[in-house]
Amino acid sequence: MTVSSADLYTHKRVSTGAAVVPWIRRLNTEQTKLRVGVVGYSNQDFDYIAALRLIQEAFDDISPDADVEIVSGRTDLGIPALAYQEAVRRGWKTVGIACAKAFDYSCFPVDDVIIYGDNWGDESHVFLTMIDVLIRIGGGTQSHFEACAAKREGKRVIEFDLPALVSA
Figure 1 (cartoon, one colour):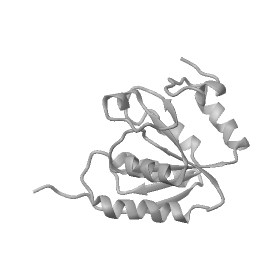
Figure 2 (spheres, helix red, strand yellow; figure 1 turned 30 degrees about the horizontal axis):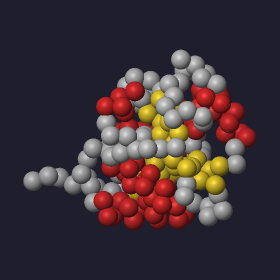
Figure 3 (cartoon, helix red, strand yellow; figure 1 turned 60 degrees about the vertical axis):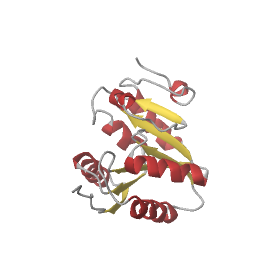
Figure 4 (cartoon, helix red, strand yellow; figure 1 turned 135 degrees about the horizontal axis):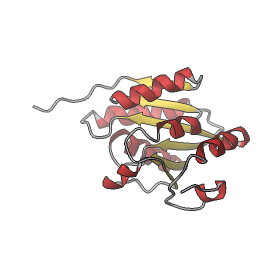
C-alpha cells in the first residue's frame, strides 16, 4: 500500500510502499526537527545501567535547542526501549521504523509508526533516509551496517562499543 505524506503522521500504524522514501527526502529538506536514530542490542544481554548512561550522554550531546525526535526499530527491547524511555522522559517525540516482523515482538508505544518490508533490514534504507544523526550502542551486524552506511552518507554518528554479557 502506498501512503501519502499526511497518512504517515496521522495514523498510529502505517504500511508503506516505495513512495515513502522520496516523501521522507522531501520532508527532510523542509524539517525543523532533528531526527536521531538509535541502534544497538535488542535481544542480547548487556549492562542496562551503563547503556542508559551512554544514551543520556549521547542525548545530552545533541543540540539542546533542537526539537528532537528519536527514531528506532519500534520494539520494546534492549537499546531501542531504553532510548524511547529516555526520549519520553525528556518530552521528545518517538518514531518507530520497522519491518512487519516487529509485530511479533513487544512494541514500544511510539508516537508514529512506519512499517516497511517483511524482513529485518528491509526498512534500513527508509530509517537511514529519515535520520540526521545516528547513535549506536553496542549491537550486532545490522547496527554496525547502519552506522557505516550513515557515515558514508555524511551523517553524524555517535558510537559506543558496549560489550554484550555472556550467560554462564
